Amino acid sequence: MFLRRCERRKSGKRHTYWALVESYRTARGSRQRVVAYLGDLAPSEQDGWAKLGAHLQGDEVARRPQRTLFDPPCARDAGEEEQVKVRLKDIRLERLRDFGDVWLAWGLWRMLGLDGLLAKLLPEGREDVSWGTVAAILAIARFCEPSSELHIEQKWYRRTALEDLLGVSPEKVHTDRLYAALDRLLPHKEAIESHLKQRFGELFALKCDLLLYDVTSTYFEGDVENCEIAKRGYSRDSRGDRPQVCIGLVVTEEGFPLGYEVFAGNMHDSLTVKSVVESLERKHGALNRVWVMDRGMVSNDNLKFLRERGAKYIVGTPKAMLRQFERQLAEQNWVVAQKGVDVKLVPSPDGQETFLLARSVDRRSKELAMHEKFIGHMQTGLVKLKAAAESGRLRDETLASERLGRLKERFWRASQAFDVTIRKLPQPIGKQHLEVTWVRNEKFHEWSQLVDGCYLLRTNLTGVDPATLWKRYIQLTEAEWAFRIAKDELAIRPVWHQKEDRVRSHVLICFLAYAMWKTLAGWMKGAGLGDAPRTLLYEFAKIKSGDIVLPAESSAGIRTTVRLRHVTEPEAEQKTLLHRLGLTLPRRLRRLDSPTQM
Figure 1 (cartoon, one colour):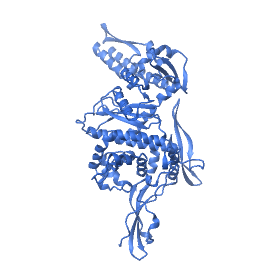
Figure 2: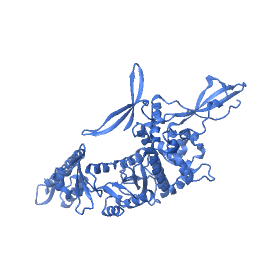
Figure 3: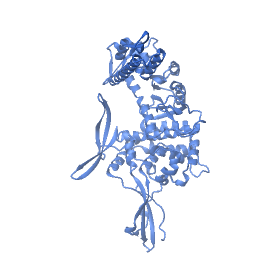
Figure 4: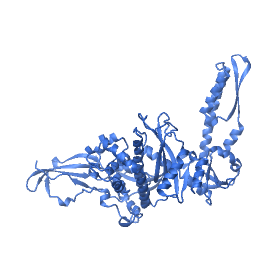
């Protein structure tokens, strides 16, 4: 669910409010419906922080964030300042900076306890800026406006209010320091993953019995000849022309990240399973884990490996295995898992596993449409091949077979839909030397009608009904959404680094940004704001900070200039979001200097 800004005019005035919208699928495609219209909290409702605090222990229980969690520690009480007379005509606003989004991101960083963790892992030395603070800058930049380290130095940091929040001047944020922070952060990857898992559990009552594992790839730009893990392989980004790395990510059923590993770009998905399972069990333990993986991970060795470790699994299988279950597919004893999806259990002959057959109405209509499309293209290509033979332009039988092979390769879904014969004529008929004929392959069409929309899962879980097994496997979409967020929202692709350790550090920063993203999503969900942070971040980014310059005269008659750094007043709809999250936006950041004589 996500937020949508709604506007209407009534009695000549414009009214703006929020609607919580849900996307859902129908037979005619995706549709959206309004779940609720959001205003201020009703007396019976709790704000988001109160609900989040219900999971915390000690002094943090059911309280809003501490003042120092989201407010700058340098804020001052205006009552401490002397009264001055201000010349109204000379008041001006200077140094406008982005505040709302970085203020929220810094609060999320501290909510996750990453500031305290890195203070222990990277103790302060002789450096001007602590490495934990530089790591926070990198993660906040990735969270708010993902780009390169050079962009952070030259543009982004200078136009944000992080100088006020972190106390680090823009001159100290440069690429050398940012790259050095990447190098120092990487050795602590496992400690960070363990800490985040613990913190997620404190904030959201994390469930870790169902683990979703998937692999994606991200490609490189630039020269990467010296990067050993940059290899060409199957690209999920349709960039097979570029070297890439593969990333294996483990998330919970709600999408919270538990760990990841980086692999060479040419590594097959199935070869990543053992190292990921061993790594996660080393960090978090091996008890009561159910692994959910897609068919790309499946191999007999991997399944044997999981069984020997006492692990449970639900995995996809290649569609070719459906031929072993032709009789069960034709039978009618299906169980409804949800509207439009039927399932049934089939025990394996050796008794070690159970197979789950599933068929989907939506998937069936999609696959049938794809088959019809490919069959149409295949038939058109055969007609052209026949015409070329009849006109005499195609006379060589070998060349005709090559053209047929390319046709089948291009329209591979229909490669068996027709039985094609290419025959050299004993005597040419006019210009024709070859005869091209084809007939419909009835077995292929019958099989297609039977299996389109069907797929096969396998598991070693026992005593679980088929509908529950299917719903657990479908949770794998959370891992796919994690990759989509990492790529579209956090810009993990392309990778511009050329050293292997820097590439791994880049992925680690994206992992931290994704952890912040999911923390905000979980917080929003508890506040009744959906679970899609992008709209909220866009609204918070409109909140700015700036210097109000006041030419004034003190009580002693001395003409002075007072410079106050303030935060802009949020609009009504932004106040609604703040109220539901349980946040209070700071007004005054600091009084920069004492009045001095002009």
